[in-house]
Image (cartoon, rainbow, N blue to C red; front, side):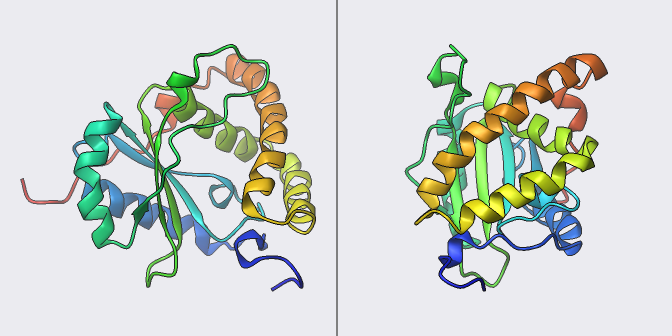
Length: 206
């Protein structure tokens, strides 16, 4: 572990095993949370080949109604070691005049469990924050030359800030810059969030 960096800020080199682990986690949580979870996706840095990342899997579940999902998910997720956090609001990109109410979510976290550490972001399907998470991931996947620079930024940042909250506050504007470049790419290529979602069928008995 790097000296003097809090454990929750350590940014590790990319682990090729993250890809298969992310696929297994999303399939398992979809099986647990469907049909209210319309899809579960592996997002964030661990979903980008070659990207250094905090060894915590960011997953995203799309639902029709956040409160309905919260009420239904609390118990089964608790059984898997997840805790519901008080965080209800995503960062609205700089320069956007969008209504912050469209950027709400629910966030569950799992730490110190026998299964991998996870942040589970539950967002309304079709919402701008659901779309942004997928666009950010897919733009980086499509532009591997940008990955080392973003990874190096995160590693330097982790060693320069005192806590995770400051890390997130500094990183958000950089994500905004990436998204500003990714939006023209999305228009030029015809990228759509719905096209990136993994088709799944629950294996639970009907």
